[in-house]
Image (cartoon, rainbow, N blue to C red; front, side, top):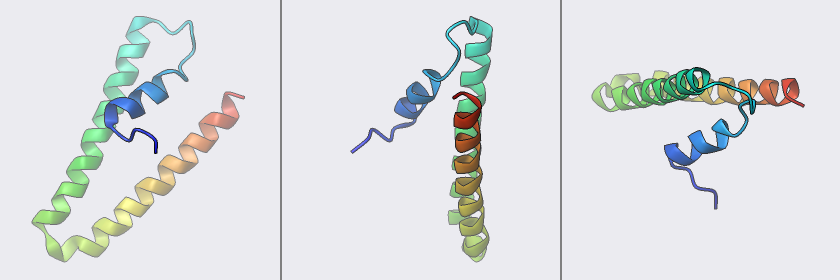
Length: 80
């Protein structure tokens, strides 16, 4: 089973960066990655505070999954 920790996800993503990417690019990319993780966690956590939004939050989760899947596929095509 793959390691599904955020750290492991970042490490798997980071190796796809160009070898010649500078430190600033790497740092900004890492910050954006973790900001995305935070935003997604905040979105999920808010569902617990508002049970009446459960269906909306589940739809948001599905949309986020679909968007991430599409983005990853697009990025793979661009880099191959």
